[in-house]
Length: 165
Image (cartoon, rainbow, N blue to C red):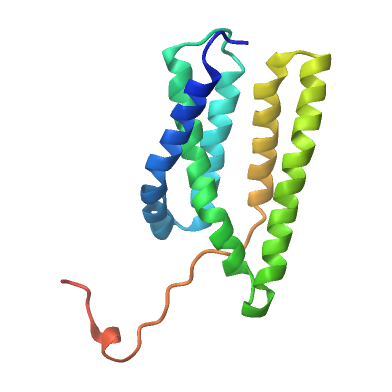
């Protein structure tokens, strides 16, 4: 629709995500998983919202897709570990099941709904559609109260270590 290469822009987005995976883990260990996910959702929203205003391919659109890839990494790296942290040892499978059931349901429903909008209204609806659902995920993430990694208490001589190595 914008006259560019879908595969190239998707590759740029994916490369940005891959490059971001390691730094995202460090960021999450410092500010927490919830804040890191919220930051990633905000990045993804910004990219999709901005995409709605483009009418042709440009270098700036690639910048927004780099931002989208990074945002996806911020979410992806932290979401499953957060689910595991939320669950007690015996309930990990149950919560993992909930997580993947909702995720797969969204992957089934969104092509149907977005395809309907693209067919009936136009292809221009794709970026606003994505931005809307990303904004809704931000709102639901605000209600999460647990799931950040808990620092383990040091035992024995480790408790005396000042960490000034």
